[in-house]
Figure (cartoon, rainbow, N blue to C red):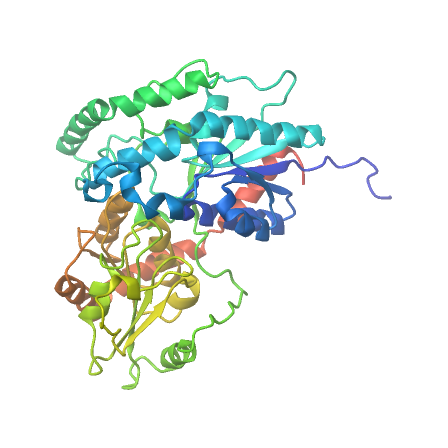
Length: 472
């Protein structure tokens, strides 16, 4: 018998849409690259500041326009432009400002840009499947009844969550209230009271979301407070980047929700190129020594992240905490942006200690292969990089989802939560040294690392998209 002459249907194009912050884009760019390697044509609607990185992943670039085209480095370069005294505001107020400016004010423009990308693909004769990062709210009008052009096929959509899930649960308080996890009857009552409080506190943002949906052609609003999960549940599936052991075991996950593992970490069989720092060989030589070799120094890696970028918050306290040639510690500090400099933040005449190594920008996966302790400000991606490499961590962060992430680091036992974004050098030193001494942190994070190895998010997402598309 010969081959089946029936022509196989062409796979749809995968259109990726994503919130514009680097911490959201980096995982979605990895997803785009992974889908390309699995035979998908990929288009990516994103900010022009990241066009080069998106195209390097093999995706066709579609540009966000106008106020939706946010350059996050420029956005945070002048905080007082966002609101008077922005940096001094409580993190809850800063978070509401960011949510409005980044997600809500931009929603109608995002929706218009999204429709334009779909139309372009359709005019080429290509139908689309959509992979949407959870905080790209510009896709929500489609899910709430906004029309597409006549006879235009409505695409299937899946959600990729790259933060801890902001989905309402009887077991948890709202994001703005980092109360302890408690599934008891009293805990449920406390959570309900806090949800009632959040409903009132966020009423203006909820009203703005509904207003923007209706202005974009949607037939209704969400009918629930903002950050309750409507932006997740409206999709055909919810893929949570991460591992179950890091998340509170809530009793009421929505339909279609699943953990898919980590996009962070070094894929098996991949050899990362050595970064171009004159101290890199020293780091490799040190980590090649046996753990009990007296010449081996402990390596503490500290990063500031890409949003709260003032190194006085965390990097400089960590460097100072372990300064001195007598210390058996090497501190590797990552500033977070290319061309960033530590000198401009240090008093004139201050010299970086001899046991510190400073990088303006450095691949976390490359450096964490050589790390003993990972100090950072609790970004979700940074946490998952630590899990992927089995490196216990010390976290000092607040704002956005960082408070939630930090509390889970402490709850899961994989590190120490300093419960502040600006710790003293004594707080950092004590936490790092206690984490080094207590082998329990390493054992617990190894459990989570093994959970991540059992899941391949790119395979899971690709296989599900194949089922949705009816192709092979």
